[in-house]
Amino acid sequence: MEKIKSFTIDHRTHKPGLYLSGAARGISTFDLRFKFPNKGEYLDIAAMHTIEHLFATVIRNSEVKDDVVYFGPMGCRTGFYLLMHDTDREKALPLIIKAFEDCLLLTEIPGNKEEECGNYKEHDLQKAKEEIKKYLLILKEGR
Image (cartoon, rainbow, N blue to C red; front, side):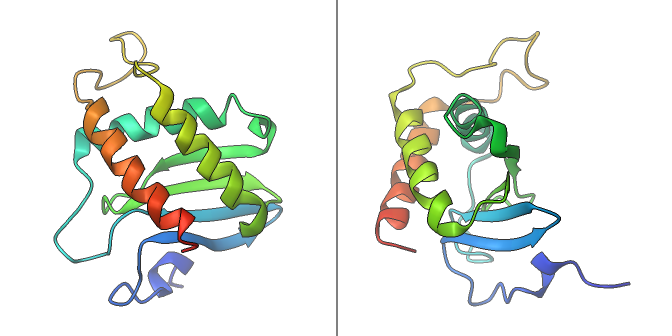
């Protein structure tokens, strides 16, 4: 079987940052890497779940909402994937920074009711915001 593109990246040297990890048929896949792979520090599950709710809601209510295809977590708990129509890294970076800054302004977790979420009790807004702040520093450093 052919290796998928994300498995061809050397995870021993991959650093936190924003990467355009693939583009096919007009869809750009971004790797929003919050943590170093395989270094023992991973995103807390409840924080990760909350980040997913915050960012997905904010970006899908932004001026680029029609370009967003998908936002979701990496199974390895080191970050997220963002899929967008025809968007390069240069265009995506300021949009992602703005969306995460807007996430920090939220005081409630969107979609956090039993009827809205399949695991509504596993959220942590404070930890999510702490992780977002750390990631924003990485993005603003230009990584």
